[in-house]
Length: 370
Image 1 (cartoon, rainbow, N blue to C red):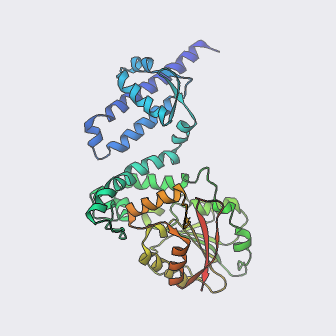
Image 2 (image 1 turned 90 degrees about the vertical axis):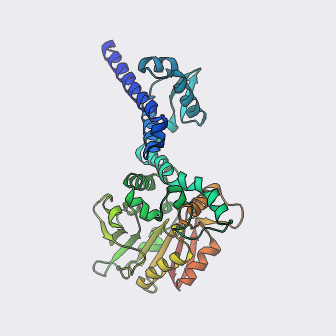
Image 3 (image 1 turned 90 degrees about the horizontal axis):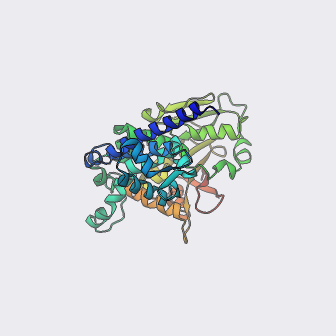
């Protein structure tokens, strides 16, 4: 191999690493940490540092010497990252990337880190003082929960996101990445048997699926990938701001829609809600369900609710953690089977079946008109 080319490549890697470390050092100043975007910039700088560690191993002393960084600072950061372990320590003061490093540098997974730092962590931090102030009453209002003091705002979270476009973008990206390694509902729900069978192909412009509040269209794309020959129209409904970020593709229509208003698509085969109702307390959730029920065709339309169904005993860590998250952010909750049946019944609907692949994963609650 040409030694000149090797040296050039190594020098380029060292240069990129030097630049990343300089940025990271700057972001760690007190002024940057207190700036409005300080935390986000710090995470991005750390992520860039992780990207440059794609070498067999670099010593702290060498890295510090090559870029003029403080070796004590660099040692402390990398030691912590190795202990998590976000990077791998291959020898005394010698570090390289590992599989977690590479996973966290993928855009949709890195977005999860940023989403939690930008949106979630302030609300979690405000939870203890909020509960003390409210004399430990269960939070049940979207505009009166830990999110408001945590973010120093009077807005609910869905009013806050459009005013914070970086946080909104990271949320949309994270929604596409949070299921990686956990499979999809299409792997355990018999979509062909329960949905495709019985679809009215003879009806002009018949709608197969309406994804209500479906973000940027990842669920419709998943259905299309899983069942490429499924007939009918597929409609993505969400706010204008979200639809502007939707990834358009053949076979998906977009429609601006507020699910607290009358559902404009009448008689679809499937109305689909993924992680929508856990954002809202019972009163609002029942209102959303009633709007869907009014559009459903008897003995034909179904509603599929893709959410956690918390067991009455021995709840899993993911569902229980999300329940605390929803309490902090929306004054809402993850629900048990009994709680799901209660709000569905009150909306004039009935639970036909609950489909779950394994514990501590999201389920499909299959719903029809009562």
